[in-house]
Image 1 (cartoon, rainbow, N blue to C red):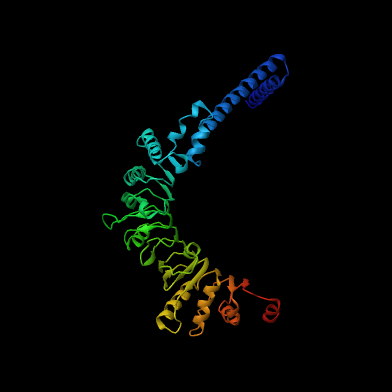
Image 2 (image 1 turned 90 degrees about the vertical axis):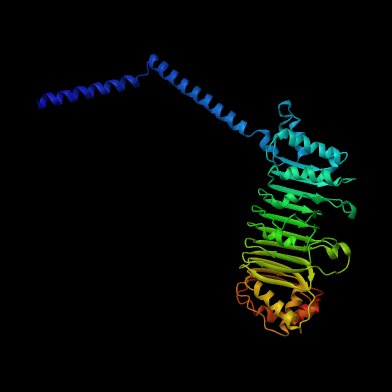
Length: 407
């Protein structure tokens, strides 16, 4: 039995070796067989590869490329091919400039055609640079209201009509746009809402410049109603209407930019509105060319960057003014990187004559502009920054003699 088993295994092994040898034989028949198989597999691969490539090219259709273009450029692009002629109408975005139309009625007709073609499709992005010769308030509000009701996500409105009698007002439906994420407005008017209920639950960025609010409470309520607001920019101008106090209350705000254009536009110094900030998660803040009597900071987060160009009209011997400055300095004492202008240095120097400065223990980088009247104050200020690693100083009217004496 053992011999029979060994013989059987030997025969199976010889048979297996013979089969392998036969397959490896370079006979014309085998060559044709393997050549055919290789040709079949390669052609199958090419067909599949070409199919996948065509699908990839289909996914990169002109429609995807048009989303980032202005509507004018989109129309130009789609005119290159007859098959693309009306594709721009299906792109969920409108980027319009009034200068591309003869008058506002041609503009309104264009918007109507776009919305009618899209049916109930959402308009994700809407931008309008508006400079009508004759402003039709009702027709304008009707079109903007239609866009807002199309679940707009990104809304930009830049108005160039500056005459008082041609105020461009926004529809009240903007106060309750549940899909809005980015809002940029220039030189427009917010009418008072029918009720004080304002809800913008998805707004993350907001840029407001030269805005008029028909009510002192609207700006504060507008900001606080943005539950996920991340970045806020406010640019003030001489004829805006923001209320008596710019009140920024937000539990989510991380970046706040406040800039005044009053001096640049009027050619002389003028006081801006007082400011009150309560933003416990604030990380970065920039105050530019701003002058006011009161700047109250109740709560801010552990700030990463501060850029302060602030001038306060205060009396340092007034206990109330010194308390306000003390709270302000305590709030910014957690900053890591700071840029401060000469007017802000003057505030700190004037306060130091009456009260000690807080410790800026987290400050590692400082850029400061020191006027000549504050040179003696510099060592005292730097003594409050024990962990400072980088220092950039700018001096006004520093002669070679002053430089030698100072250093």
